[in-house]
Length: 205
Image (cartoon, rainbow, N blue to C red; front, side, top):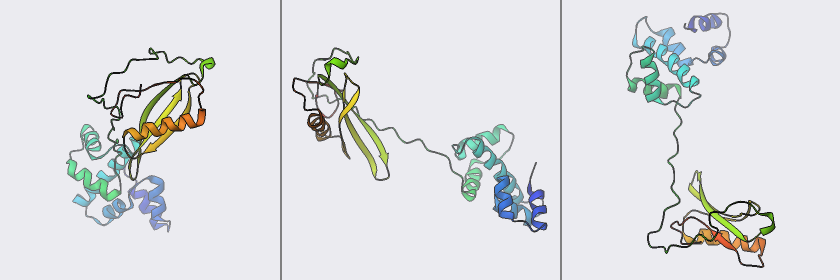
Protein backbone atom coordinates (compact mmCIF):
# COMPACT_ATOMS: atom_id res chain seq x y z
CA UNK A 1 0.00 0.00 0.00
CA UNK A 2 1.42 3.40 -0.99
CA UNK A 3 1.59 6.21 1.54
CA UNK A 4 1.77 8.96 -1.06
CA UNK A 5 -1.93 9.90 -0.70
CA UNK A 6 -1.40 10.36 3.03
CA UNK A 7 1.62 12.61 2.40
CA UNK A 8 -0.42 14.53 -0.18
CA UNK A 9 -3.15 15.07 2.43
CA UNK A 10 -0.55 16.30 4.89
CA UNK A 11 0.77 18.71 2.26
CA UNK A 12 -2.72 20.05 1.56
CA UNK A 13 -3.17 20.57 5.29
CA UNK A 14 -0.04 22.73 5.32
CA UNK A 15 2.23 20.23 7.06
CA UNK A 16 5.90 19.67 6.24
CA UNK A 17 6.34 17.19 3.38
CA UNK A 18 9.97 16.51 4.24
CA UNK A 19 9.07 15.59 7.82
CA UNK A 20 6.20 13.35 6.67
CA UNK A 21 8.51 11.52 4.25
CA UNK A 22 11.10 11.01 6.99
CA UNK A 23 8.53 9.61 9.42
CA UNK A 24 7.10 7.25 6.81
CA UNK A 25 10.57 6.37 5.43
CA UNK A 26 9.66 7.42 1.91
CA UNK A 27 11.90 9.16 -0.60
CA UNK A 28 10.80 12.78 -1.04
CA UNK A 29 12.04 12.70 -4.63
CA UNK A 30 9.88 9.65 -5.29
CA UNK A 31 6.85 11.42 -3.82
CA UNK A 32 7.26 14.46 -6.06
CA UNK A 33 7.98 12.28 -9.10
CA UNK A 34 4.77 10.38 -8.55
CA UNK A 35 2.85 13.61 -7.87
CA UNK A 36 3.88 15.26 -11.13
CA UNK A 37 3.92 12.22 -13.40
CA UNK A 38 1.07 10.88 -15.44
CA UNK A 39 -0.39 7.52 -14.34
CA UNK A 40 1.52 4.56 -15.76
CA UNK A 41 4.59 6.59 -16.66
CA UNK A 42 8.15 5.46 -16.00
CA UNK A 43 8.50 8.03 -13.23
CA UNK A 44 5.57 6.47 -11.35
CA UNK A 45 7.09 3.00 -11.74
CA UNK A 46 10.45 4.33 -10.53
CA UNK A 47 8.73 5.87 -7.51
CA UNK A 48 7.02 2.57 -6.67
CA UNK A 49 10.27 0.64 -7.08
CA UNK A 50 12.15 3.16 -4.93
CA UNK A 51 9.68 2.55 -2.11
CA UNK A 52 10.15 -1.21 -2.34
CA UNK A 53 13.93 -0.88 -2.66
CA UNK A 54 14.04 1.32 0.43
CA UNK A 55 11.98 -1.23 2.36
CA UNK A 56 14.21 -4.16 1.29
CA UNK A 57 17.34 -2.15 2.11
CA UNK A 58 15.97 -1.24 5.56
CA UNK A 59 14.99 -4.87 6.24
CA UNK A 60 18.58 -5.92 5.52
CA UNK A 61 19.73 -3.29 8.04
CA UNK A 62 21.49 -1.42 5.27
CA UNK A 63 23.68 -4.32 4.18
CA UNK A 64 22.16 -5.22 0.79
CA UNK A 65 23.57 -3.72 -2.36
CA UNK A 66 21.91 -3.60 -5.78
CA UNK A 67 22.44 -7.32 -6.68
CA UNK A 68 20.83 -8.65 -3.50
CA UNK A 69 18.04 -6.05 -3.50
CA UNK A 70 17.33 -7.01 -7.11
CA UNK A 71 17.21 -10.70 -6.16
CA UNK A 72 14.65 -10.00 -3.41
CA UNK A 73 12.50 -7.97 -5.79
CA UNK A 74 12.65 -10.78 -8.35
CA UNK A 75 11.50 -13.28 -5.72
CA UNK A 76 8.60 -10.96 -4.87
CA UNK A 77 7.54 -10.83 -8.51
CA UNK A 78 8.80 -7.34 -9.34
CA UNK A 79 10.20 -7.56 -12.86
CA UNK A 80 12.97 -4.99 -13.21
CA UNK A 81 16.60 -4.90 -14.22
CA UNK A 82 19.54 -4.82 -11.83
CA UNK A 83 20.87 -1.66 -13.48
CA UNK A 84 17.58 0.06 -12.81
CA UNK A 85 17.75 -0.99 -9.16
CA UNK A 86 21.31 0.32 -8.94
CA UNK A 87 20.27 3.64 -10.48
CA UNK A 88 17.33 4.08 -8.12
CA UNK A 89 19.49 3.18 -5.13
CA UNK A 90 22.02 5.83 -6.13
CA UNK A 91 19.28 8.41 -6.52
CA UNK A 92 17.88 7.51 -3.09
CA UNK A 93 21.33 7.59 -1.49
CA UNK A 94 21.28 3.87 -0.63
CA UNK A 95 24.26 1.54 -0.79
CA UNK A 96 25.23 -1.82 0.64
CA UNK A 97 28.03 -2.64 3.01
CA UNK A 98 31.13 -4.22 1.54
CA UNK A 99 33.13 -6.71 3.56
CA UNK A 100 36.75 -5.71 3.75
CA UNK A 101 39.18 -7.96 1.95
CA UNK A 102 40.90 -10.21 4.43
CA UNK A 103 44.57 -9.44 4.91
CA UNK A 104 46.83 -12.45 5.37
CA UNK A 105 49.61 -11.88 7.89
CA UNK A 106 50.93 -15.41 8.58
CA UNK A 107 52.94 -16.13 5.44
CA UNK A 108 55.50 -18.91 6.01
CA UNK A 109 59.00 -18.09 4.86
CA UNK A 110 60.24 -21.11 2.83
CA UNK A 111 63.85 -20.09 3.55
CA UNK A 112 63.43 -19.94 7.32
CA UNK A 113 64.96 -22.74 9.36
CA UNK A 114 62.56 -24.98 11.24
CA UNK A 115 62.65 -24.30 14.97
CA UNK A 116 61.66 -26.81 17.68
CA UNK A 117 58.45 -26.22 19.62
CA UNK A 118 59.98 -25.42 23.00
CA UNK A 119 56.63 -24.94 24.76
CA UNK A 120 55.36 -28.32 23.50
CA UNK A 121 51.94 -26.85 22.63
CA UNK A 122 51.32 -26.16 26.32
CA UNK A 123 49.53 -22.82 26.49
CA UNK A 124 47.90 -23.32 29.89
CA UNK A 125 48.45 -20.43 32.33
CA UNK A 126 50.77 -21.11 35.27
CA UNK A 127 50.78 -18.08 37.61
CA UNK A 128 53.92 -19.33 39.31
CA UNK A 129 55.91 -19.25 36.06
CA UNK A 130 55.71 -15.60 35.06
CA UNK A 131 58.14 -14.38 32.40
CA UNK A 132 59.17 -17.90 31.46
CA UNK A 133 57.09 -18.44 28.32
CA UNK A 134 55.92 -15.70 25.98
CA UNK A 135 54.00 -16.06 22.75
CA UNK A 136 53.49 -13.57 19.97
CA UNK A 137 51.22 -12.87 17.04
CA UNK A 138 50.46 -10.17 14.51
CA UNK A 139 47.06 -8.76 13.66
CA UNK A 140 45.96 -6.04 11.27
CA UNK A 141 43.75 -3.00 11.68
CA UNK A 142 42.12 -1.27 8.68
CA UNK A 143 42.51 2.52 8.70
CA UNK A 144 41.76 5.33 6.27
CA UNK A 145 45.45 5.39 5.34
CA UNK A 146 45.79 1.62 4.79
CA UNK A 147 46.63 -1.39 6.96
CA UNK A 148 48.16 -0.90 10.39
CA UNK A 149 49.94 -4.00 11.72
CA UNK A 150 50.01 -4.76 15.45
CA UNK A 151 52.51 -7.20 16.94
CA UNK A 152 51.87 -8.37 20.49
CA UNK A 153 53.82 -10.36 23.07
CA UNK A 154 51.72 -12.23 25.66
CA UNK A 155 52.91 -13.86 28.86
CA UNK A 156 51.41 -17.36 28.71
CA UNK A 157 51.44 -17.65 32.51
CA UNK A 158 49.22 -14.61 33.09
CA UNK A 159 47.65 -14.16 29.64
CA UNK A 160 48.63 -10.49 29.82
CA UNK A 161 50.05 -8.42 26.95
CA UNK A 162 53.55 -7.52 28.10
CA UNK A 163 54.75 -5.84 24.91
CA UNK A 164 53.46 -4.53 21.60
CA UNK A 165 54.47 -2.52 18.56
CA UNK A 166 52.74 -1.10 15.47
CA UNK A 167 53.95 -0.39 11.95
CA UNK A 168 52.73 -0.02 8.38
CA UNK A 169 54.75 -3.07 7.30
CA UNK A 170 55.31 -6.74 8.18
CA UNK A 171 59.09 -6.72 8.37
CA UNK A 172 61.15 -8.27 11.17
CA UNK A 173 61.54 -4.90 12.92
CA UNK A 174 57.85 -5.02 13.87
CA UNK A 175 58.25 -8.21 15.93
CA UNK A 176 61.62 -7.11 17.27
CA UNK A 177 60.06 -3.87 18.49
CA UNK A 178 57.33 -5.78 20.35
CA UNK A 179 59.99 -8.01 21.97
CA UNK A 180 62.08 -5.02 23.03
CA UNK A 181 58.99 -3.43 24.58
CA UNK A 182 58.23 -6.64 26.50
CA UNK A 183 61.79 -6.91 27.81
CA UNK A 184 61.77 -3.25 28.84
CA UNK A 185 58.43 -3.64 30.65
CA UNK A 186 59.01 -6.98 32.39
CA UNK A 187 62.83 -7.06 32.72
CA UNK A 188 62.95 -10.88 33.09
CA UNK A 189 65.74 -12.20 35.30
CA UNK A 190 65.86 -15.70 33.79
CA UNK A 191 65.66 -17.30 30.35
CA UNK A 192 62.40 -16.77 28.42
CA UNK A 193 61.01 -18.91 25.61
CA UNK A 194 59.30 -16.88 22.89
CA UNK A 195 56.87 -18.89 20.75
CA UNK A 196 55.35 -17.57 17.51
CA UNK A 197 54.10 -18.64 14.10
CA UNK A 198 56.72 -19.43 11.49
CA UNK A 199 55.89 -16.40 9.37
CA UNK A 200 57.70 -14.10 6.97
CA UNK A 201 59.16 -12.10 9.86
CA UNK A 202 61.70 -14.79 10.74
CA UNK A 203 61.96 -17.80 13.05
CA UNK A 204 61.18 -16.19 16.41
CA UNK A 205 60.76 -19.48 18.26
